[in-house]
Every structure is written in structure tokens, then in C-alpha cells.
Image 1 (tube, rainbow, N blue to C red):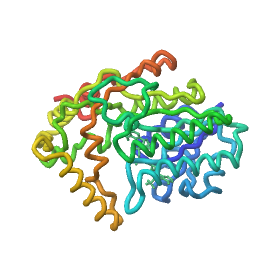
Image 2: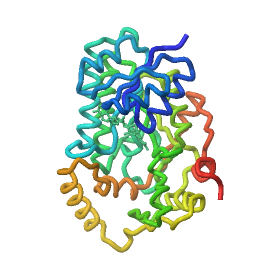
Image 3: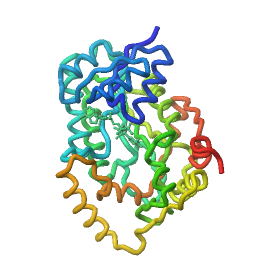
Length: 323
Ligand SMILES: NC(=O)c1ccc[n+]([C@@H]2O[C@H](COP(=O)([O-])OP(=O)(O)OC[C@H]3O[C@@H](n4cnc5c(N)ncnc54)[C@H](OP(=O)(O)O)[C@@H]3O)[C@@H](O)[C@H]2O)c1
């Protein structure tokens, strides 16, 4: 018999494929979305969906009531206006845990949180495992570290919490691939492209999250990435081969980094007075420039993970067609 599962961020890019997979496995899935439009997308996948934010304690409590598994995906790099990473990720976790405390953990077997490889910051290409202390270079990474700490405290008082540190996710429709910009000949990125940004195909990300929920240990962290990291340049060279347009132009070798960051900071400040989500921010620059590789042996040896797409260049051929 299927389990009762609650998914926050259910209408998001990772949320929707996860919900589809859980519904196909026979689970009784309840999503949380902030908008009716998002909720309609989740319902179209065969789940039910509540409308509200993490701040709506009663709505979240309804989602948690009777849930055996919770996937906490609501969060992200930054929202529009004043929605900083801290508000979205740290405060969001605080709000979720307050609701968990109010409802109790009677039925709950697992609470899986999607943290990020951004907690590791820039390690000059070093291969890091889960025991490596976090050293985020961005406000986003710091907000995920803070959320992880709140969750690990909760694990100490009996919440069956597990952490998935996700690499950058690619797959059909994922903006990280920069398909539209490359097709239009307008893809520009900071850095030189020789760095490693960990990646994972969405199907493997979903499989990993499910394995962590089903067989992970409470209070444990799991890196979620592919097994055969490629440089950013190799990744986008493959996207360009498949979709045409112009290769990504890596521009920051000739603009000092303090100038790039000052301009990005000014842009973010101006944009935060509009309802738009600023894209050119100091965090985005650093996330594309940092270099780190993630060791994923824990996922493989403890949870039996079997990657469908161990290498992103090969994975992109499946997503975009080979060229
Ligand atoms: N995609 C990646 O490459 C990647 C890599 C590492 C980690 N992660 C993490 O994985 C999670 C899912 O990523 P994603 O790519 O699916 O993100 P996404 O497409 O931006 O979706 C995020 C979801 O969170 C919801 N949300 C944000 N703040 C909320 C709040 N206060 N209350 C309720 N819902 C809220 C959003 O709702 P709205 O639709 O209303 O905005 C959206 O449904 C995020 O926590 C992200 O930080 C993602």
C-alpha cells in the first residue's frame, strides 16, 4: 500500500518530476504550492495540492498530518524583490520545523531536505565528501548551511531528518542548461569554464531523494551528483553542439572580480525594488566560478544508487539529442 507523502515546493522543477514518480509508485501525495496555478500543475500529476507558503502554519500542518514521508524542496537561490536566500531557505526551514513540532512526529518515517553543493563553496576542484566542513562562498550556500543546522538540531530531538546536498540539476526544461541563451547566441558566463560545477540529471536526483527517504539514516548527509564530473566548458560545449547557436562566452578573465561583484551587487539592489527575480547577482557569479567535485560513494555504497546518467556530457545527449 502506498504511503502518505508531503512535498513542499511540489510545483518546482525538481518537485514535479518527484511528485510524478511518487504517484506512479502508488504513494498518496500531497503537495504544497504558493499559487493556484502551481497547485493545478501538481494536481495534473495525480497528487492533491495545498495552496499556501511555509509561513502558513495551518496549511503546512494539514500537509504534515499523517505524513509518513516529507520531502522539503521549497527554497531556492533567491526570490523576487526582498526574498533573500536567508528568508527562503533558513526561515523556511524554521517555519517547517515549527509546524513539525506542533503536529508531532508520530507517523513520520523520514524528512528529506534538499540542500545544495553550494554549502562547499570554492574548493579549487577538490573532491569533497559529506564530512568536509561547509565553507560557502555565497549567501545562498550560507542559508542552506543554516537550514541544515536547524534540521540536524531537530534530528537530535527525534525528527527523522536526512539531508540531500544536490548538485546543479539538468534535464528537460532546466534553465541551468542555458539552451535558449546558447541558441540565441547570447550565453555569457563568468570565469573561464575550466572549473567543476557538480551536476546531476533530474532522473538521478529524483531516484537519490527517494532512496534517501526509503533507506537513509536519520541525521545523515548525502551528496547527490553524477559520478564522472565534467568542466563547465565541457558541459556547455555539448549543449552548443546539440542546439546550435553560439558557444558560451566566458567573460571574466579580463574583468577584475571585485568589479564584477560590485556591478552585480548594484544590479541586485536596483532589481530588488521590482517584482522581478534578479539573475545577475554576486551569488550567481560565484556559483558559476567556484570549483568543487562531490564524492558520491555514500549514496552508492549505503543506498545502492544506480546512476542512469553518470556523466553529464552523455546525459545531455539524451536530453537534447546527440550531435
Ligand atoms: N535545481 C537545482 O539545480 C538545485 C540544485 C541544488 C539544490 N536545489 C534545491 O532543491 C530545491 C528544489 O529546487 P528547484 O530547482 O525545484 O527549485 P524551483 O523550481 O525554484 O522550485 C522551488 C519551489 O519552492 C517554492 N517555494 C519557495 N519559497 C517558498 C515558501 N516560502 N513557501 C512555499 N514554497 C516556497 C517555490 O514556489 P513558487 O513556485 O511559488 O515560487 C517552488 O515551488 C530548492 O530548495 C533548491 O534550493 C536545487
